[in-house]
Amino acid sequence: MKTTHKEFRKAFLWFTLSALMVSAGDAAAASHWGKYLFYVGTYTEPDSTSKGIYAYRFDAGTGEVTALGVAAETTNPSFVAVHPNRRFLYAVNEVQKYKGESSGRVSAFGIDRETGKLRFLNEVASRGADPCYVALDKSGKYVLVANYTGGSLAVFPVLDDGRLGEASSFVQHRGHGANPERQEGPHAHSIDVSADNRFALADDLGLDELLVYKFDSANGSLAPDPKFAKLDAAAGPRHFAFHPSGKFAYVVSELASTVTAFAYDAASGSLRSLQTISTVPKGFTGHNDDAEIAVHPSGKFLYASNRGNDSIAVFAVASRKGTLMLVEYVPTQGKTPRSFEIDPTGRFLFAANQDSDNIVIFRIDQRTGRLTPTGKVLQVPKPVCVKFVTSE
Image 1 (tube, rainbow, N blue to C red):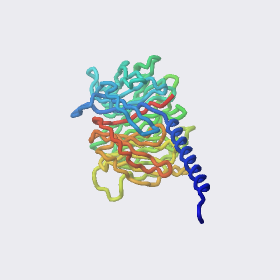
Image 2 (image 1 turned 120 degrees about the vertical axis):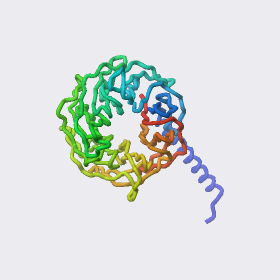
Image 3 (image 1 turned 90 degrees about the horizontal axis):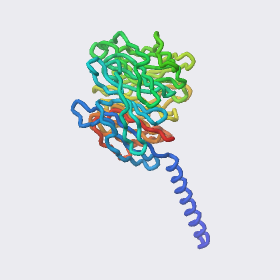
Image 4 (image 1 turned 135 degrees about the vertical axis):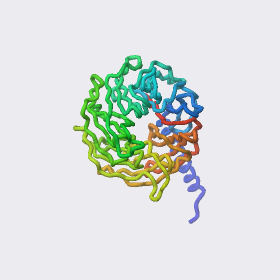
């Protein structure tokens, strides 16, 4: 059928209007995503050129990243955490000695939102050697720390000006695991609080346990005699993540290269094992140590990093059961992905490759969870963790 000039003109105008509407929608969406600061904790020693904590700006609408340089010079700030009020940042300094004692330290900084620079506030002894993890409770009143070599946990009050007070609670783990080389004693590797701020959950790699402590947010104390979930012998639990629903929790085990899914009872803080699944491809025979774990904000996907296989394992989460199904393994385009972080919009994953001195940015498919490299690679020495400062 022959198209008239009038019909053609009408169709052209409709197409142009549609394109403009789509373009406007894209612009509005880009504006909605916002702009963020993020900080990178690193190893400064040994054999590293890193100076400490590095700062960047990230435009979630365009995917562009701007380097702001060294935010603070400090020793081995391997893990950092941002206060809920976005005014303060806390870092563990992963060292074995502090003022002659067998202890690392914890440093407090003020955040300059305009420049990204960090202003040193104070530091305190972590109460155990090689602190490797730091988090805040939901109220922002306390900082919680896991000491790896010390095999202990400590809680510190946050003062009004952001500085840290001396420990309000301290717990020394005891015992050992089945692996004589890696589990000769306790090795606390992470600690986080539940959504209701009533429990503090801590992975101990040396004991093969995820311990659940009652947490008193009035005085910053961890109650004795915690409940615990036992992992497989020589699993080496490292980090865990809650599902957004609060019904499930997931533990990544460093030594076994697995993720274990648990049903979580928020009322009692108890855990029931549902499934254990490998994070490495079938037939992989090389050495591998798992590192990081995260659940996508949508709750539909879970990610875990493999150091050795140098990949991110992607899993789909069954919404009702909480169990996992493999989606894919994605090379991190670097060596030793120590950690990774999903940006606040849930659209990007930042993989920190410690031994290739880079952070590789991936786009997350919101429908399938699959990862696609964006082509953006940040050069930063010995990156360990990435933490965003969310918008107001």
